Length: 261
Image (cartoon, rainbow, N blue to C red; front, top):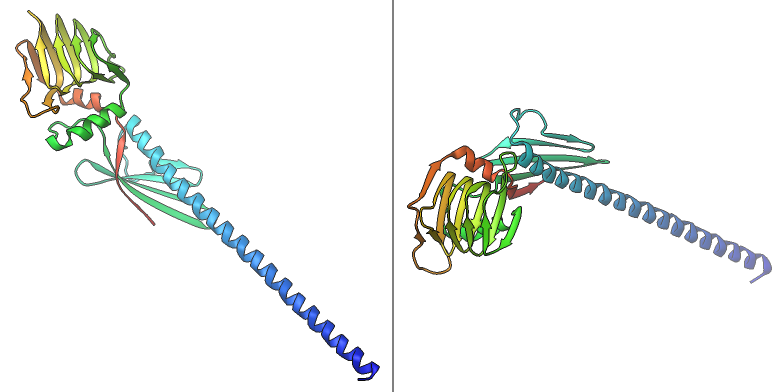
């Protein structure tokens, strides 16, 4: 091979190498751009999902504090990047529709929620779950024995759980009281809201004691199969739905089901 042929072959080889490097560089740039696009797309999708989820949680808290809105056509919550509507559902359930946008991504979450609290006529098999919910949302959780005269006030209905025996003395209580042991009453007491004796299911009366309950009284024995032992001779229970509602007011709306799209 002469010198000119060698130079031509070397030039061709150099051009081929440069072409390969250019193609490789282009492929790397395209791959980097694609990775960046995928990463940004994933980030905006995640942001829209988090915003929609946050809208559901914000709406649950606002429902607990302010109640169901009168105008269902207007957004219940409007904030940066998201809106939440409240729709009537089946029975006492509500549907929250939270829509959020981040970049080019849009996410909608529908959550069916139901107000927590103690129902008027609970099914026996639900008592364990109901008492667990009350204990989780208690304003005060005390170990017995406990003596109570006055508790809460008209502007602040509270949730008190006594894990043991409790004695109600002369005074007034506002809210929900759950007694896991024995309930005793002495003097003259008045309870506004819900009085629950679930566990030992026993109520004892001291001599000449009396009481008035405005709302509801519920007694159940869950420690064994023995019947309840409740001396209610001095107690008057006044059926008062508004008082039951006030006693349950502090409980949040629980999520029953979720759908996202």
